[in-house]
Image (cartoon, rainbow, N blue to C red; front, side, top):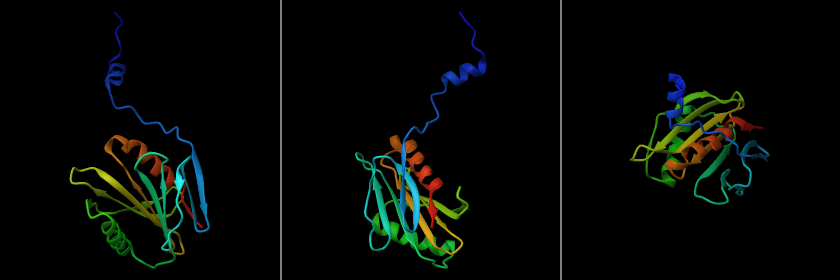
Length: 165
């Protein structure tokens, strides 16, 4: 019988394994913005109000983007306006407070989630502005808790690669 060092034994017993993103991505490059989404996803047409959805070939999750010209809005105003449209589309869930930060590309950003009555953050949002005040709002709708880790990686890649032109 071989004696396994304590830390190695703990590592072997830990069922939580890091999720490694081996997904291939493609660039969605539009006149006002760009970002990467998983290869093979459907990229929808932009609506008259600047929204676009990206959906997998199979499954119910989705990524979304919406642009706006220079607004001069405060983060509080952008948050309230976002919640108005989010709740108009889907009244379920409770919003978290927003958090301010910066994206990997250096944009000032605000992020928040919608939480189901079971406590699952199934919809997540990041809004950022460039120095001219133009904004890009990105979101993910996670189809289930089972798929959360995968969709979080998709959304992280989308946010990390997003640029406002």
